[in-house]
Image 1 (cartoon, rainbow, N blue to C red):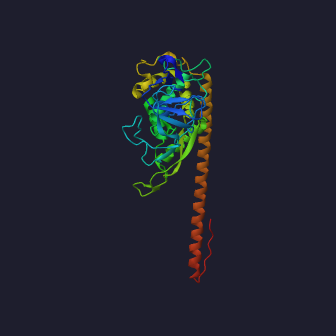
Image 2: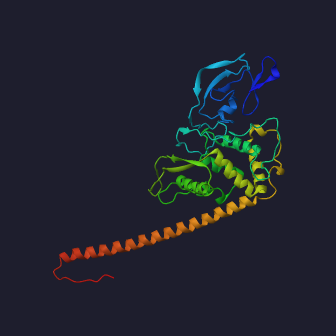
Image 3: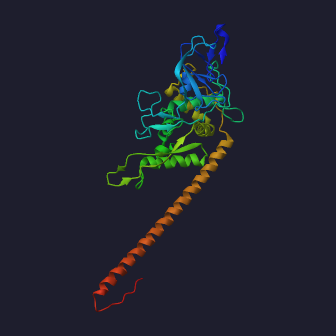
Length: 357
């Protein structure tokens, strides 16, 4: 993409953020898409639009230069974007989440899912708050851009996913308490299952109930023995929230209670201090609907009914299993009594007969 502001030496614009890539700054040029360039910030943050995806072969320019090639300095190699990136564990990294366990896999799959693949690029000239929803309650580009920026902030490993710990931190930063934060509320070891796996199961149930897009990865942790000597199960499925899933579940939350979420997001934006929104001022109440969306409330109510039915079914199943176990234990005990008597009878010439009730 070009800009004619420089006469014979037109600047190159980033196809995502529409900002001029300074001639001395790095640039990424796609070898698959036609006339497609990204600034370093957008390329590293996986911010794409149109048909570009992370797996496309790209050229890296140490210095962008101008559109006619003047001043461009190409790096040594043409590369394919890595499908696996090292996990970021440095506390100095932007968006570092201290709650993420150090035992997470060092190599994580990059997700190709992005918000803007079929949407126009957001114009940075519009540096002011815009409505978050259309009249039909469809999220606007302004809201999707905000959530994309928040996702990238929380996704410190740049994996394309939010780990349960990171999503739980987001809810905590929004001000969610108690059962509102499913993962944190269920972070309790039960029987021989670790707290992480119990919390993962609970969060996955929420994602499944609301049909929220997520992927599954095996959580691998060192074997843990609690103070009582019980070895806890520490490996199991871990739900990873995708960008699309993050948009969908957050949209439900916002449309279900716009007034509360306006206060929550106002606080969150100030806390995260995202670069794009510096100088924009406080989030105006007018960007969100005045009242909850009836369709969203109906969906939430329907899901709650399903959850209650599932809970009742699971409780009945557990009670039935406990009854069966008790009956089995009683039967085993009776058999043991009979066996003991039969052994004793082998050494007793005065046979006695017993009736077992």
